[in-house]
Image 1 (cartoon, rainbow, N blue to C red):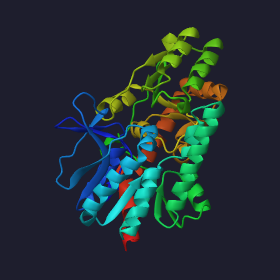
Image 2 (image 1 turned 120 degrees about the vertical axis):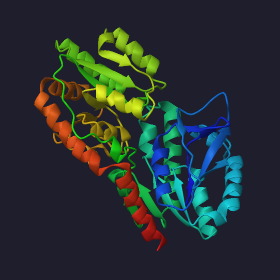
Image 3 (image 1 turned 90 degrees about the horizontal axis):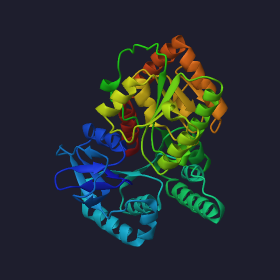
Length: 391
């Protein structure tokens, strides 16, 4: 199976690295294939690298470099050059794979799909997010906002046209509705968990602490809604409630602004900026030290942090957006709040802090949910659909 990836890779002469843990889900398919060919933008570099290493220590897995691009803007700026290089790599390797998995909603993915179809190869597409909503959530204003939204609409329409007659895998109900509405005949829903069955603990001892620790994991960018978390903290403190601390695990362009907001509101004792935490044992350890997960996003697909937190028995407070309610059931394994609503977020935090029995019940149900959404289960479900497609 060939996999055309949309995330950059780096190679330092000995190790490969990248920035998105999604690659672990992709690599799990080596247990179900004779060979896994990863076509990815690759840059040999000893001075920079991705945030975590990618283990390619299996003779069934091979990295095939295509022209490197770091961002979507860079992709479109160099699209003719990048497409020519990608097409040459695909032609060279055509006889080495039976089916192609094309990841992403970019024009490059659509071009590759059309090209491989002409060559008689079976292909399927994989979409992880609603590009239009993702762009809107960044809060671009004026002419720039209109331009960015218009471009994202054009790209999404191109993706819908290209994949209309192909097998499509999407993350969550929202994307499934979009593709079905636009005439795609074969759309399958998948949840790309990166939580292995061995990461799911049996039970969790719920602490009865004076101050509860809420962990937020993800990029510090506008769509993650962390500004609403600061405002929720302000409301709690003004009401005389101080039994909480928010630990933000991540980096991003909003970090300096969020730190200023926290300092100006005199909330430093209630916030900790922990920086990026490497996925794996270190991140699981951070979940184990927390009392709950908080996810105040304004837009989401299916956040992987939900599986990770539930696998460690954490109750969840999350915005009711995108695919979140497909995983989080209100008052069953977590609490749902409207996006962009600091008052509701503050009340949910207060409820969890004051109700130990609720935290224990939500965490226990979360463990049951995590067992249904392990990487192995989701991979095998997707693999069965691929076999049906090949047949």
